[in-house]
Length: 424
Image (tube, rainbow, N blue to C red; front, side, top):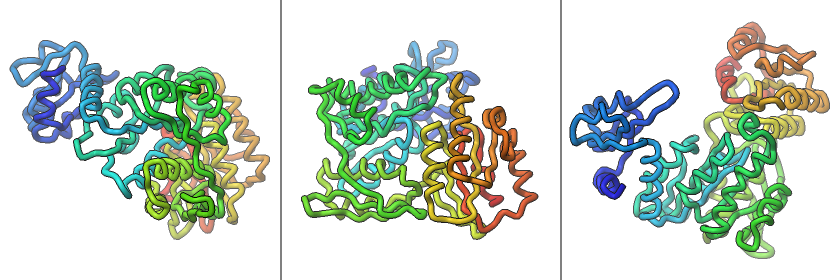
């Protein structure tokens, strides 16, 4: 590993896709269910990579190839070694909902004072976390590392790689139940982040209004040092969230006008303010950072198409996030509301019950105009138009004259609801 790290210090750029090689980088030949990048290692070198890390001897034909037992393990070990050598303060973030938005808000705030590195996009898994860490440079003062999980033990593994100093769990809820089995399984997996910093880190930022998080944190005290979220209240949300946050002194407050849609984002804003305060930012810097952040990638986005006003939250969906979105939309002061909801995936044996719960919620809130997409909703839906897939929905919308509506678009990524946006 020391030999490989010496090469990485000389060529500190890592590549895992032979179609997008950067000159003077090191190619790691990862394997997947449907590909074996060992076969593309020579091509990567021909495109400008200096070295290629492979784990099949037949491909290591000259001294530009580094043969290891397992490429992914080597990538993770290299990232962990680099993280230790850099010594950068690392904040680890996980949670069922809101972790990417919270990560982006933290980055927007901390940028006001520090040189930071943070997870790009959704690179939050066993490959994405090492790639993020390998981007650390001496000038970085803080790194914000998002960690996702869909099976037990995954957060613990990512903690061993990223070695976070501070932990932030946004919340725990019913998601990826095919992998976790139950809410308790979710809590056990996500809670590994608290456990790591309790024994090897410096503390956790905890939303003490969330009983699950309080329970998980208390189980680790006195080892876990807890920094509670700053207080805050919602002052408006039609459509953009506005808040009054606790200021740096007893009589101070911070008024923030976000570009986020949904009161459920209030805890994410409070998290960003808490971390900013902890790291010495002024009230003005915190306010500016939060207000500068504009959501992208179909997460809590507001889009005015000229014909309709859309609330697009179609990157992901699970029972808790779906319920919050529907409830927030019901409370929003707007007319001509239309719900376009897609299936919530990866719920295993609880799928039928959870889709029924969402239908009950729709009924309770009096929604009249609802379009549903996917077979899971189709199995329990009795009264609303239901489409097997997004292509069927698109054909239906093309035949309608949908205008002057407020529309919530929410579903799991696999349903691809973002494809209807150009039609609305």
